[in-house]
Amino acid sequence: MFPSRFRYEAPHSLDEAISLLHDGGDYVKVLAGGQSLVPMMKLRFASPELLVDINNVPGLAYHRTDPDGSLRIGALCRHADLAFSGLLPATQPTMTAAAPLVADPLVRNRGTLVGSLCHADPQGDWASVMLALGGSVIAQGPHGRRAIPLAEFVTGPFQNVLEHDEIAVEAVVPPPAGVRAGGYLKLERRVGDFATVGVAVAIEMSGGTVTRAGIGLTGVGGSTIGATDAAAALAGRPLTPDSVAEAAELAAAAAQPRTDHRGTAEYKRQLVRVFVKRILNGSLAQGAGATAERAA
Amino acid sequence: MTMVYDDLGDEAADEVPVRKIRFTINGKKKMAEIEPRLLLVDLIRRGAGLTGTHRGCDTTNCGACTVLVDGRAIKSCTMLAVQADGREVTTVEGLASASELHPLQEGFKQEHGLQCGFCTPGMMLAAKELLDRNPDPTEEDVRWAISGNLCRCTGYQNIVKSVLWAADKLRAEA
Image (cartoon, rainbow over all chains, first blue to last red; front, side, top):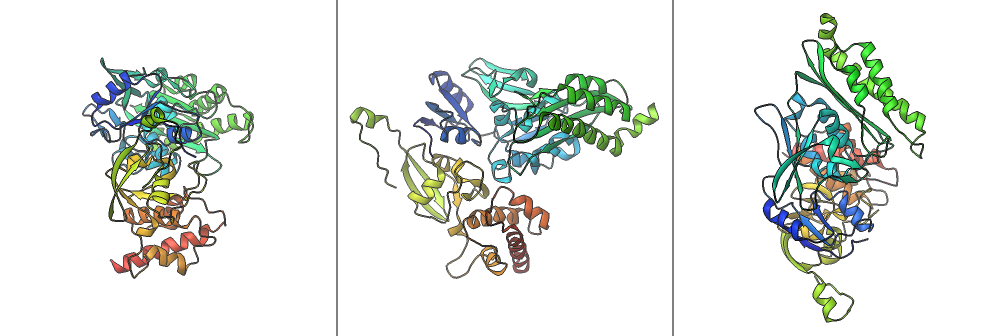
């Protein structure tokens, strides 16, 4: 299989890439890791007239923490960079858990987090993680940059709010209000298969209280689901077995699973419930709850 | 490499975008004139004539077409050949020296890591990246590292042993 014919440009700066997009006509795609786009082009699900390859643009392959504690992930930061990161384990438990579960090791060597967010596949892992963390996408266009919260960035399956001449140049995770806890769990039939169910939980603890909580659900709806009621049930109180159980029930209720060859709707809903509990019980066991118990 | 196109008249001929790229494959510098839609696996197999890289599923699932690009194992059916411009590609043909097998190849022989052999080049290159990064992997490390490579002979047990054999040998040589 091979893609239908397209024009190919590999600019060496963002400005050049953006002007190519601006002048590029009706059907232009940005190529970063290409681990979703190239297969789609080979299957002729996508047939762009112009491909703007940003792999030669310098200075996009980073992930780093700013002095204020926010984490920035550049458009060419590969999944493998995050899976082998020395930076993430201390401060980003949810991302650290998710990175080695994205696709398979070969795809992780090329695919990018920002590209995965743009692709907006309801089965994509990073969208749930970034939703749980309250992250944003930074888009750059001819008129400058804008930050788009992930909850507004994805508008539906495979759809995002980028203008045709904008490039998602980085993803940002805001600084935590306190200490981060949480995780990511995914059930897949084999490595590299689409998730049967994935659950991202991110909480921030300060003085025994959950100061912020986010829960994102992968593969149980037409797009990534933010379980906002479940997150609200955790926030503003200590983390306890009762609040964990309540959040698990509300997250299961927020899922919109469909029965398919990966399992029945009820099975997937049960997995959401179990995964939320498992992640939060892990946080409790690691001490996020111990201080909470004392405070309570 | 030579590409042959359907002759659809002069106007259409002008529309065939062709780009010249330079890349290194197994240490040898190469130039190619290619259409941007050519996949890396085809540049390697049909352009460079190196058929040790196998086209398996052609849908980014099986890992048979795994090669190293700048030292990282990737699926060559899921990267455009034009993106190899300026990069260094290593295929299974680049593992052995003129007189000696690479320890990975020796390991696959010693531990019977091959059955039909179709997945073998991809397995070896995925394993090469692992051993370059982690010279002393556990069995679990090996299993995760080759989890993007499918073997349909159900031969994983011996493949894992082969990689561990190679790791031992490389450490002994170091």
